[in-house]
Image (cartoon, rainbow, N blue to C red):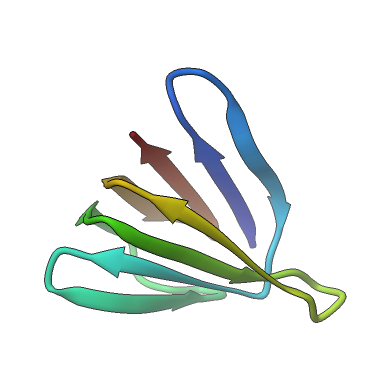
Amino acid sequence: MTLEIISAHEITFKGETVSVTLPGESGSFTVLRNHAALISVLTKGVVRYVTPDGNLHSIDIDGGIADVNNNVISVCVY
């Protein structure tokens, strides 16, 4: 599945992932392949994602919005 993390200033990450954990307003949640479509408000926290080579990456965010649809996770952060 594809993860895109973007801000008003740059594209922080765009690439393939195996799993993505996001800091949702009601608590953190993990998105895996073929996840149901959703839109969520994100709070200050850490976005964690695993790439196909098995490496875990993390990015601190101050908040944002996540859209999950057809194995594409678009995260707009501020």
